[in-house]
Amino acid sequence: MSVALETPPAGAVTHVLADGYRRLADVCEALALRVAEPGSERGQVGLSAAELMSDQGALDAFVDAEAARVLDRYGTAPRRDVAASRALHDYAWSVGLLMGGVWYLERRVPRIRPEDLRLDLDTATYTITPGGELACLTGDSLAGGPGVLALPEEEQLRAALRMAVADHMRPLLVALGPTVRRGARTLWGMVSDDLVSGIWYLGRMLGQEGEAVRAATDVLPIAVPPYPTGADFRHLVGDDGRRHATRTRAGCCMFYKIRPEEACVTCPRTGDAERLRRLEA
Image 1 (cartoon, one colour):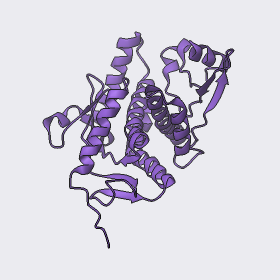
Image 2: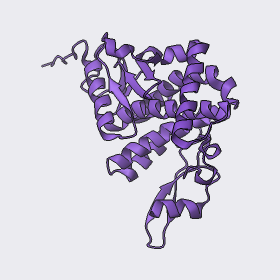
Image 3: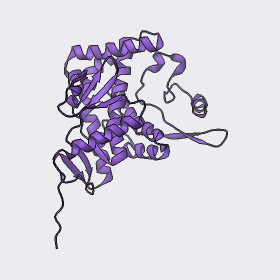
Image 4: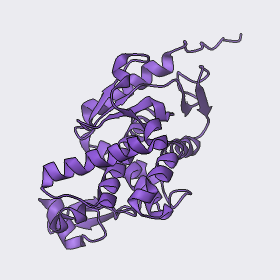
């Protein structure tokens, strides 16, 4: 006797993505995120990613807002390329965490259209309107529903994640590249760093750092175009024998230009001894 498979109802994708984004916002303190209902006025706050990618005035405002935040927080007026790099880093990290986080938690990969993500320049808060498209594994309860790409293998789903992040970020890299004043390899290095570090950060927030390091390594085991490097995690061992995960960024976030004595713990300028000191502290 054949059994008819139940097709997920219309709107199911939007509903589960909204739940996934809310869970990320609850777990990840560093992610400033609001989840909007489709069609709500709340989703119209701030500049959309589509505007950042197509409107020079919006892009200038994006960089100006980051420069003002740096000045307010650190008392330093950054060079314009430094402010642009910091703004791009924050955006890429947020996008990487949104897509990579849903993948890590639920083995689902959302497609975030540029018009679905908005940034309030005054508060640096992102607002996402959940879309209706995602990729998942064939055994997922959403498989077969509208807007769903069902894939039979985990590696295919990881490839879908890499592609979704790249498709979203590519137009912004083109638009912001001249202001950042860095080449394509460095820009894509930043995107790969932020995809990996978003998953890593989520794992730490969940008390699952080891699992997250393995998951991020599965996403980028080696350089996979357009990403110029793999996750490249390694471990430092303290005097007490504890192992601490670390990696070195391929695309510098430029924080060392703001606080030279406080380069990021994954910055190429930060030696292993200093990394270990900070990690043990």
